[in-house]
Length: 191
Ligand code: GAR
Image 1: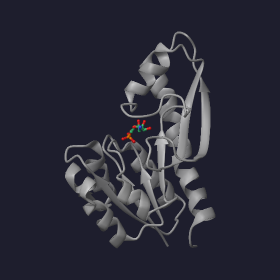
Image 2: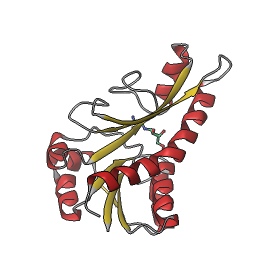
Image 3: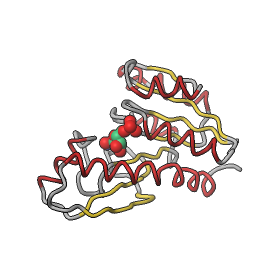
C-alpha cells in the first residue's frame, strides 16, 4: 500500500485527478490532503472524494508542526499540487527525494519566487516564447531547482493569450502528473 500526502493551496484539480487516477486503476493507495487555505477549492474536492483534509497555518509549516504531522503519516511520497508556500528546510531534510512538485512551465525558465499560476503564463506570453509546458521535479531547499523527473512541451502560437497558454498547460498537467507519480512510486518506494 502506498501512502501519498498531497499539499495544495488552490482549486485542487490536480489533487482530484491524482486521486481519481489511483482509484480508477484500483491501486492500493491512502491519501491525506494538506492545505493552508480553508476556503480553497481543494477543500471542497477532498470532501467530495472522501479524502481526509487538514488545514494548517503558515506558522505551523515554518515551525515544523506540519513536518511532524507528515512524519506520523509516514508517506511514501509527498506531492505538491498547486501548493504555494515554500517547503521548509525541516520537511526537505526529513523527506529527501520524496517530495514532487509540478511547475506550469519548462524549468529552469520561468521558475522561482513569485512564479506561480497565471504569473507564469503571463511571463511566458510577454517573453514571446514559442513553447511552454510542464515540469515535474523533486523539491530541494531552493524554489523550483530540484532534479527534474519529467517535462512535456506544448507549442504556443502568437495569437495565444495567457489564458490560452494556461489552458494548454492545464491539459498536460491533468494528463501526465498522476502517471508520473505512479511511475515514480513504482521505481522508488516499497511495493
Ligand atoms: C497548477 O497549474 C500548478 O502547476 C500551479 O498551480 C496550479 C494549481 O492548480 N503550481 C504552481 O504554479 C507552482 N509554482 P490546481 O489547484 O487546480 O491543481
